[in-house]
Image (cartoon, rainbow, N blue to C red; front, side, top):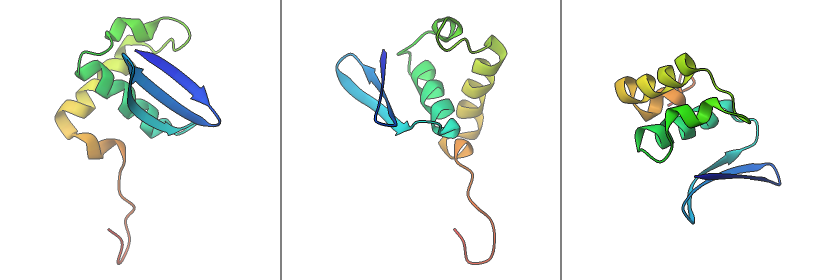
Length: 85
């Protein structure tokens, strides 16, 4: 896995394939991307513990649990209100 941050867009590559992209600073997409990469076996959770990411173990496991138990949509909650979907 490799990560490219260019022109405000963060792109995750697995091998030579573009796996996922999101806007720089989009925290929900960042969490979702890493949870997916871990869950699909493209990255070992312990690799995210090292620099430059330095994400604590409990945090990584919470994201992975959220993905497995609550699904993809849980990372991107819908806005409530009348007439909104």
